[in-house]
Length: 129
Image 1 (cartoon, rainbow, N blue to C red):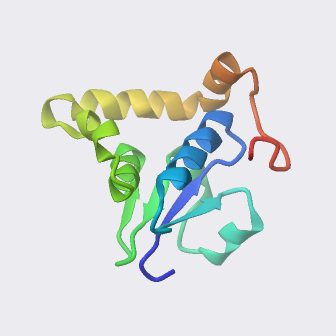
Image 2: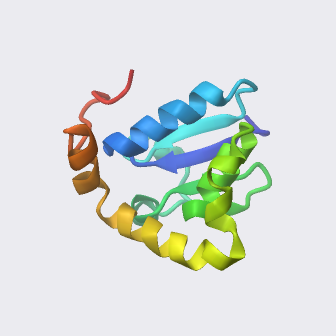
């Protein structure tokens, strides 16, 4: 997995899980490795702070660089040929606004998930297909 990017995400969040499921479906070259921050596999990455990863999504690049938030999501989607989905969030004129909106979502992701999916949290992989 040396050429893989590692995405640290909240597997208890229904919307987060849904997005990761979609991302993996587009990953034809299998360059993405998902790590649920609440799984035992997360222990294999002691350099990643669990609370920070719970606050905002993290992506570890093959070269060791760590991306967070919308930069991380844009990179992940770009790696599967769908970067255009997040490209507007990285446009200089809108970047600060989108970053603030992402942080607001991240802080309220369980509540937003409940509103949009009817589920507030996933348990024991219940959100996984």
